[in-house]
Amino acid sequence: AQKITQTQPGMFVQEKEAVTLDCTYDTSDPSYGLFWYKQPSSGEMIFLIYQGSYDQQNATEGRYSLNFQKARKSANLVISASQLGDSAMYFCAMRGLYSGAGSYQLTFGKGTKLSVIP
Amino acid sequence: DGGITQSPKYLFRKEGQNVTLSCEQNLNHDAMYWYRQDPGQGLRLIYYSQIVNDFQKGDIAEGYSVSREKKESFPLTVTSAQKNPTAFYLCASSLDRGSTDTQYFGPGTRLTVL
Image (tube, each protein chain N blue to C red):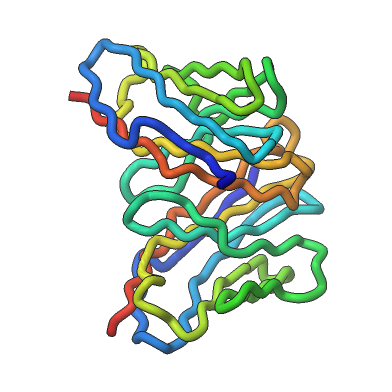
């Protein structure tokens, strides 16, 4: 079974500063993918960034980067230069390759609510 | 514009009624998914389909049914057997290419049982 843990229910960050959202995971799959999604108040889940378990380098997408520490089973999201529009729920998710009948589903954490302060 | 559409945005249902939520995608994706989100929670998988005329149960399929008659469409029916159907429902689709596969989501339908 796969499990995602996000220990920060809510976070505050000053505009233009960087913020790190924590995510730890547990899986027995040898190969897996890690994802971060943003959910604004409108409800739609917006894909932000992906990290493969065998990727040598940390993923980056614009102001988003993923601090991947495989030995510690952590995949923290770093948002640089925060903007007011970054205020939203952020979900960490993972997908395993060899999970049998469940191999095609994403397992989500409970999310972190980020509030950007002007 | 390619994307995923869900309708309606808001849906109200009386107890004992079945309702169907629509999900359509024009991304030419093979796989489609239905998730349920309760307040303060992450998403939980209801059903998924990797190919037309085939679908699999997720973690919380009881009280729900789906069909996949066309590649573009994956409607979800919330039946009267679903004991607590009030929730936010999200549809997603993907190319279905293994662990690197990224799922893209529609705008969601908020269902309220009166």
